[in-house]
Length: 206
Image 1 (spheres, helix red, strand yellow):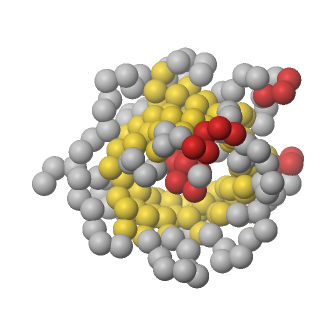
Image 2 (cartoon, helix red, strand yellow; image 1 turned 30 degrees about the vertical axis):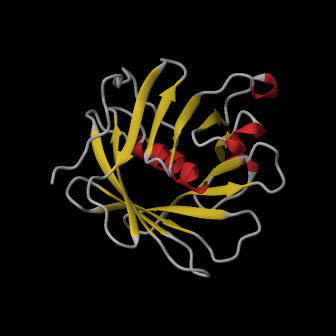
């Protein structure tokens, strides 16, 4: 059975690198990834692994069993922490903050993610707005990236607001195994794949 690729009709490769987490996660050609979410029963937490087209694990997600801020760590294939994803408590727009490494200090903030409206809680398709730490616009009126989609529906698009292009897409894998959810992700050339993975993880946890 063939793996279903995300629709790439509107994908356009950025001329310059889209670097948010690190330039080492950018390559000058489109890349394919597979995200495998292994479902666990309570009190264990689901596990995430991200593999390349050769089946090698390139990223994995660690979620502590108990965390005051829904804290997650994204690691590289050597087990080094890349970013910390932290969901702020008691916020109307379900805000996430993403920090470099294992830090949760504001000086290490890379970007933040939030829902544009509290009414999205009732919608099956979500929109997430992404603001880079260097974005100094007043009251977050101009976002840098946008995510549209749904983990449960198995699809999402990531847009760059600067270019108005889709820079990554996710779709359900044609082959699903018992006890896990499998997705394929197309990341355009010169786009930070670690950044894309972090956004998709946040979508899955919303």
